[in-house]
Image (cartoon, rainbow, N blue to C red; front, top):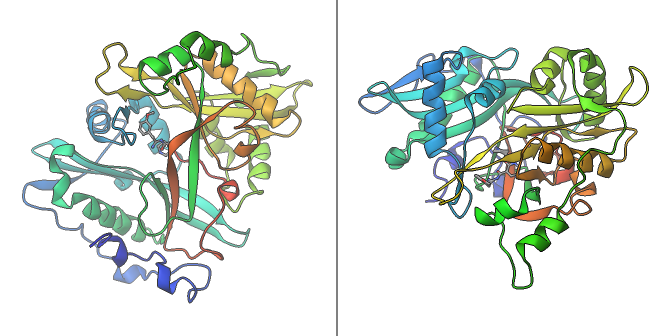
Amino acid sequence: KPHQFWQTQPMPNINEMDKLKPGPIQLGVLAEVRKDPFNLIEKYEWFNVDLRNEEQAQQVYTLLKENYVEDDDNMFRFDYSIEFLRWALLPPGQYADWLVGVRVNQKLVGFISGIPVTLFIENQQNKVKMTEINFLCVHKKIRSNRLAPVLIKEITRRVHIKNMWQAVYTAGIVVPTPISQTRYYHRSLNAKKLIEVGFSSLSARQTISRQQKLYKLPEEPKTPGLRPMKKKDVAQVTKLLNEYLKNFKLYFKYTEEEVKHWFLPRKDVISTYVVEKEQGIVTDFLSFYNLPSQVINNPKHTHLKAAYSYYNVATQTPIVQLMYDALILAKNEGFDVFNALDIMDNDKFLKELMFCSGDGQLNYYLYNWKLENDMLKPEEIGIVLV
Ligand SMILES: COc1cccc(CC(=N)NC(=O)c2cccnc2OC2CCNCC2)c1
């Protein structure tokens, strides 16, 4: 039976959609939350991962590098770096028991992560403290042991114990019940490499040099005053971001502490550039994160260097110009491709900047929450997961 696990979860399913009113589907009762971890099969044990510990970080890195998400044709696999994982999973307010590992004989064979977020859902009244779930991964060799449902139940229990009852996550697959089905797009920065690794293909009339000319970019960005973000910009970036995100039906509200964590540039992890035309006034910013993919058995290349659009706020600079500069900056940082979803205002630049649509979709999920109209359009989504 498909989705035998998901039918047991508080996610609106088809027939009961209309009966539920917007808001939590099940009201959690703290006293009823199991105090002890779920049972694991013989020899498997729970393990809280300390990402600050080099050896444990290496274990998570290797598990993901070898067993995490691949594209539909199994040609590429995400290769998150240790520094990236520390950025993604050690934000302000993180809980030590929300980085959940499963070990067998000291070897990590399963993982799932949660970070605390405050999500605004469909209006200012619904400000919900919840968890953002990510990095669910089970070693390829033990996929049939039904370990994934236990990882999900265990992190759910650890979230419930903190009196939080909702979660937000994304997945390439469709399980009950997506709140939005977004599409991904990519913009070639290094046409030759994309063809060599098989990410792009040439049609009969196309040649590599034609493609290189087609996607060629200027050496330098156009926008005057564009520069890497610095600590002194945090207050203005926080205001710009929080103001901009109010346009959407699903968004986080950021403290300055959180903006420091999520946006101050980190080499090979996150790049953020601000526009300061007039002395001291920041009017726009752009950001993209670094998520390379391992190219699975290619004679010439081991990795595809991909930049992923993060948050971009254009209040004085036209969004197309700002994102054109993002492409130039990403190219100059050595990326081969620039990826984006059709969320927020991205559809305002995807076509014009020659993004091609990818072959899959990224589904957004909200656990234990009924939306007013069940689904949101991609342009109503104001959150980017890594
Ligand atoms: C090119 O190498 C890949 C390696 C693994 C999977 C995919 C396809 C894919 N599933 N892409 C996305 O999910 C995606 C496409 C555009 C923007 N963000 C994305 O995913 C982000 C956000 C969700 N967590 C993974 C990274 C591509």
